[in-house]
Image 1 (cartoon, chains in turn red, yellow):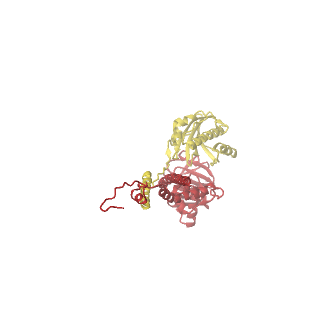
Image 2 (image 1 turned 45 degrees about the vertical axis):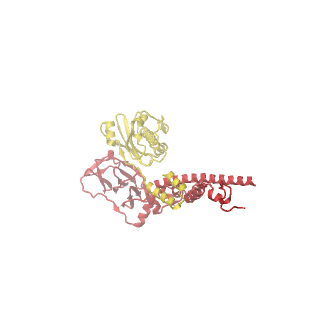
Image 3 (image 1 turned 135 degrees about the vertical axis):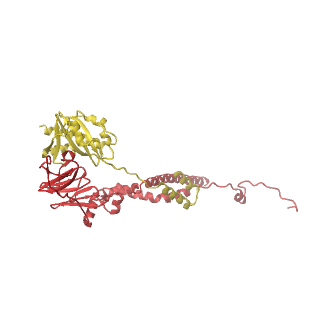
Length: 276
Length: 187
């Protein structure tokens, strides 16, 4: 029985002594960071990882999906690869043969003439055509096959500024004078005539331009190359490189936090098994 | 910056603040890329090369290639030789050829002088590629001096240059082709 006016004795409460005390005095539990980090990193890396996995799957089976032989020639894709010609297309025609030049690529009809840039003039003789480039003349036969390439050593004078068809031959405008070559283009005769240098005309026909655009890019980009660039993120330049670095680091942290969570879960499982 | 992002991820519960930091980081990094463009480098003009070899540019001569010669050149160059005829210059017991061979994607214009069935000199006249220009240096071209044709290849090993494999191969093929063509005109 309690006596009136007497204070109860002071009692020291230790941790775990009663449910009430535990609420007040329980030491603060350290916040777990692994689970929210794991959740957030998983959400962040899910989309890029899925992207890499899907494109990787296609690349792994490139032959089955015929990725190497399939070409993509959509203007957006070609533009991304810088495979759209710039500037205007020019053409010249001689006896039904059409030579076109667009952004450094020369076409003989629809065939690309390799290692030819800077077409300036086209003229024909009885054997075929002569193409005047920046520093070279290419002689083609009637089938469009290369006969030879002539440089400054084979010209009568420098510079060569133009070509013209004259009396079944190709005349060269060199250092202000016109010259006619012999059959082998070794010896030249100066001719005292005034000729109109052959020029190039602009190509305006839309269908021709579309065809030339496609051929300029070699038919388009192969699907395997496109898939590889999508897989590696090459379209986005340096941004993709750093972004993929971040995804890699986040994935590694994701794996790390996953292991920590797994270890804790198994630890709790062991503890609960031990209690039972 | 990546560690900062991860640190903010671990110590901040707000998803919005994390993504805000991430987006800001990516924008700061930017998207720049640099490309290298190749321009033709003329080391020596063909006329200068000829004048140096012969004193003056000799009379141009033409070798019209037969089917057999095309076939042999194809086996040397490992591709079809497109031209139907080749020009050469002769004088003082030497034969000079100016040949074009593709390195990676562009022509390498090379002058080759053959004397007595051996390479007297090989010189890169015009180099158009963006990489591999080291083949124009004398430390590389000196290896060709005195080389002869052995079957369809040179009779000696030419040391390559790291990063210029295709250009080195092109030079070796040009040397062998010039020796073969010289043998054809000296028959």
